[in-house]
Image 1: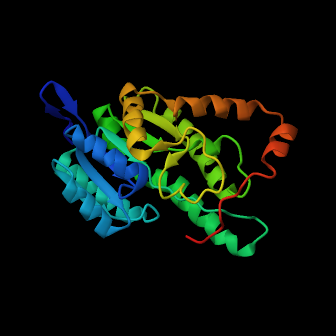
Image 2 (image 1 turned 60 degrees about the vertical axis):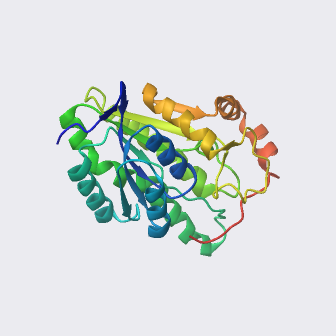
Image 3 (image 1 turned 45 degrees about the vertical axis):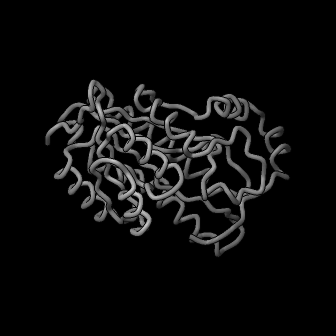
Length: 265
């Protein structure tokens, strides 16, 4: 399949396939890349929001109402996008969910399953259609949106923290698998971003960024080809310090921390 990067003046405008595109970080990334002249493949579950977004963006874009839990739907969207726009330069697995969970509550098992299915297996389903076409072309970036929540387990958010830890490890495995193929695998770990996912968090969120502030920072990390990055950089320092804390200190500090409300997905 042809390489699909387009040029706007002297600047290359990438072809980007993006999941979780209808809100939050995904919407902000879509607006940012569209502003660069990119051609976008936009994937989300909410058809109305997706169509409204696509219609509001400059340029030529393709909208796909699909759930990352549905491998066939994602494969079909990927196939259609590659027919229309060529093999993308960047694939961003951004679809994700978060909800408070407690292991001792039997009804929360369904939430655990949904969080893992979307946040971890959703990445696999998003990347799978593009690996071989990118390998054949010997270029492209597979970008997974993880989280600093995957660095240490947050009480009351066991499903989310564990899913993001699994995402970080999965992306690392994939990065090494594809080493030397020309295909980059990049792990992006946002700190606190002001989105519908975080607006109900009942605890302080240091270094909070708006999605519109975060999107260009993410795009710069992607353009540099950085294999692993925390945004904003201040949260990278916090994350390293948390990782170094002895368990006894970490447990004491977080035992009484505010907890995300439980719910269903």
